[in-house]
Length: 313
Image (cartoon, rainbow, N blue to C red; front, side, top):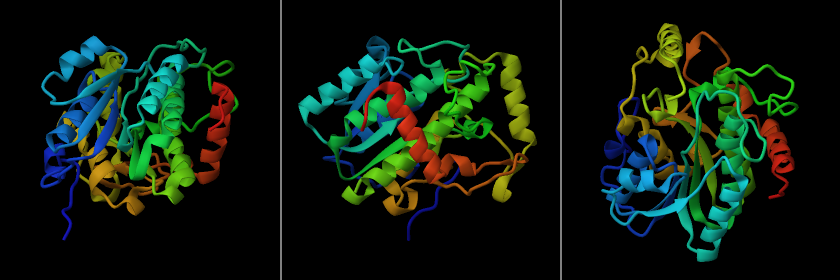
């Protein structure tokens, strides 16, 4: 009988007894937090891990204890960097069994990427959209893509008419919500396009974790978020909100990427090591909003993203 995991499960518990020898894995954002822990536990179970990071010196220091880790430079706020990193991997020709799109930014002040996109949408979604699609040929049969999303997708649906806030007043968490919804929709459409060749995609919410991701948040904003999460009624009778450790936060990524049945997680959104329920209720904590897994919305985002980056996949 398969084991049951939940909110408190750690990466080591989820992968207990799992042998990943011979498997090749790519993890983005391996310079801190969840990315480092994800790379660590996968390598500890025998996987050959390639880690991508914007700051290679920082990543080298953070991953110094991970045996056999290969590092590549990837700045998701630059399409040129995303394309160059992908092209190097394609030229090497080594397939991957799992790609975890972990890197991202959160609640940044208003800004633009070097390509002119709003910072959070450009980094969290468009950078990964180009990078992942350019290495799609390297996904081996039976492989998976895991996109790191967030409960923050509940803050906002995507805005296909004004993705860069050219006409909309900028709000840090609305922009974050748009980008995290885009992460789910990208997984939904990537899964639809690739499942016939045995490649599946899913999106995950790691949980509330205090990492470098929140470095732009003031203490006031942090407390407001904590209060809102604490006061929300837990969906499905779950316990009240509590912070996760980094090993607990990274557990859903490795669960969805390695342990869960592919057909169960493909095209879905996962949290606390299970497939989330569809919830359209502001008073409930947990679950995924219907707009984030809407197949037609996913197709529309894909088309708009291709238009924005000037590349068809």
